[in-house]
Image 1 (cartoon, helix red, strand yellow):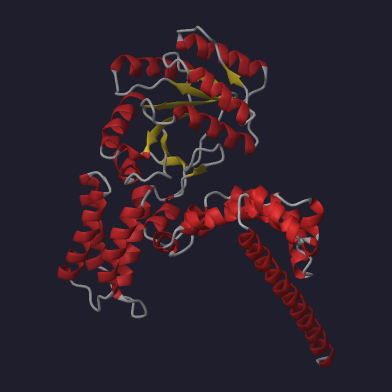
Image 2 (cartoon, rainbow, N blue to C red):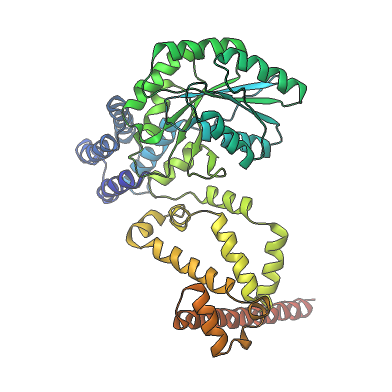
Length: 446
């Protein structure tokens, strides 16, 4: 999403890092490049102008810390201002009452229905009992889509087919929630290709009826400059409490994310980062600012890993690796665990400097290699996975043919796996030796 912006900012920062002394002239030149980068990323021009003014004022008035280069100090100021622009800190949902209500609003095609299901899944994991409400009576497939998504995330969906009165649907949904002890209702409302007043007034009546604790504007990250007008209109009509930015994994320029908070004064609360139900996360301004500036986002990467990896399984695998007892069956489990974390490109980009690595390397080639490895191991019998030594020429030909690779590719994979096993055995022996030496040193010190 922010690749182009990150790349342009990195060029501007190269000039900043070389500054031996801060002056109005050299800061002005560097910040002009930053301003152009923001405008090209579709950031609202007023937001970009005010951002640059604040950075310039702070940079020129900054006392230079002796141990830090002047250029690095300005980059720190830009980082802090970017965090402030995005909303300072993660703003969670403020849910109270039983049941609580969340109103999902936005333009047609912004991703409201999908985001409703994703939000429901997230709240379910947090211990709440959500009920998805199909309140879009205009789009024919909206109810079917929400019902299907509800099945995927294992959540009940209230659907009243044939109904045209949104307020009636809302009353019935509230009654059902109370009867079935569902403490959170998520209303998937209708959208339009453009904002029209009758629809907005219908949303106002729905809001007045259900009195939602949260009214979330769902906005496509690719909306660009128009995002400002959309957000302003919905905020004036409905007094939104926050927004959800969808399609952050796309290749749009991402200016909407940098303009929303400044224009509406309301925080971005969640971000959709993929098509799957789990590709939905709380929006953390500081982490997003670090990603934009090419500093990575290790915290989010660790959180993803913690969610995808079973701790007991990881300990068991670590023990086997230490003893050099890792089998191809274990290796297959590791490959599948990696797949749960998401595309390799997005994982690498979360590491500091990772965006540069992604840009200069073909990650799809590595993804393809992983898929081939998985296919080769899946083509083996359980016995062959546990004891690769029995793989003679005939067996190798069968596996290669069944997994769509050459025998040479299979041999290469097996050789690499054998080398990895040997390395792990050596590491295990080295750890034992160091432990014994540590014990001996302890006895001598007594």
